[in-house]
Image (cartoon, rainbow, N blue to C red; front, side):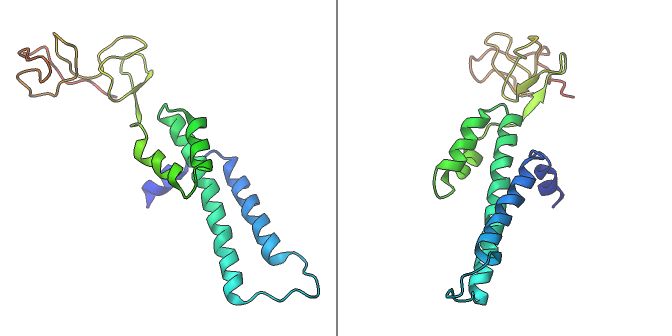
Length: 164
């Protein structure tokens, strides 16, 4: 449960009051607004349905805020993914985001810049982020004796990267 709460902390602070406002407006509109004399009273099922619907709207707005913040954290196009999550119907945009999102960025041990975890070298300072083949410069894993891409023998110069 703590992982879930930790992830919710990245949602921008402005999203929470917006979600409450939107959910509150839906509760007021369906349950609390003055009714004309000829309108029938709502039963328990309808009341529960409107309350669950308001909770769903609240959760949807928070999810959109999470997608916005998470895409920024991962170095993705945050506006594009947020708009896709909002306008592609039936949650397909949000589901696609979670299937297609990039891994979290890592910090370069030399300059502290944010880099994708798949990068072998830092694009800002050029320092090595992961062990690489001396011939083709592609990423290799510690313990390999040959490069899987070019077949070059790997010796002691291939070392694991130092991540902070």
